[in-house]
Image (cartoon, rainbow, N blue to C red; front, side, top):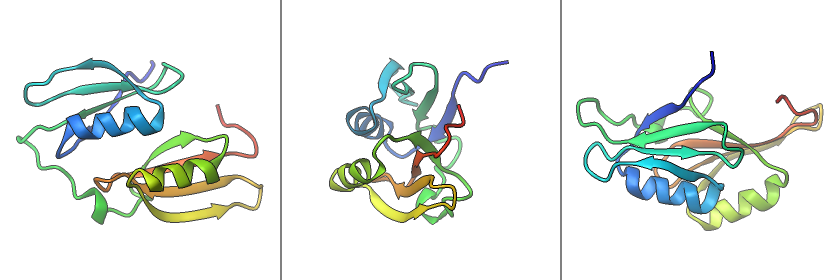
Length: 127
């Protein structure tokens, strides 16, 4: 089987989707403006998709209070330093920035709403 999407219940799906499109090279595949304001976003490869929505039947998690090792959305980055700085300028916040023993770079940030996003440059690509 193939994963279609991973969904995140967020406070403001419209603004969150706009930010991800503008700053993380994602594109809107489908959206519904009326509640629950579902926005399906594809990554730049067009093969991975996330859903951002707001469903009041379930509380929005306090992403900012969650340890990023519990939940994060990871992106491949050819230039983690440049992408980190660009995302910080766009309202993200830095959590950690490390280089592993094998030379892989992992930069953990939070989007402006607290959801953890990671920039990965692996010494050996995993996919």
